[in-house]
Length: 127
Image (cartoon, rainbow, N blue to C red; front, side, top):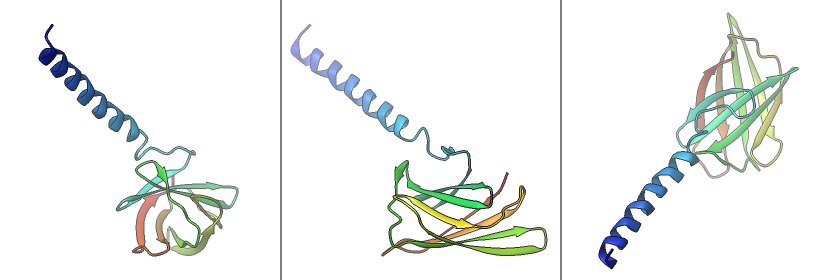
């Protein structure tokens, strides 16, 4: 095998491996990782987890955690004709938390303001 053929083969293998790593990096994109529901707003993804009256929102961007220090948020819950707002506050590296009930089937509107960024808004339905 001559050098040119070997170099061509190596280039092809390398280019395929790049595509595979990108596919693996986005394999979790849009999939809940903590047992919650998924919502997207531009480059950001939110996973909303409601357990025992406590809400936790995981904030990521293409699978990478987004720092929530200095962030603020609000989750509007529409359950039938009842509307309630739940304040969200930073609670860890990429977490926002709040307290309030969220029933199955409720429509959710999440508003998040990250420091120095445009406000983000996403919708979801609690399952």
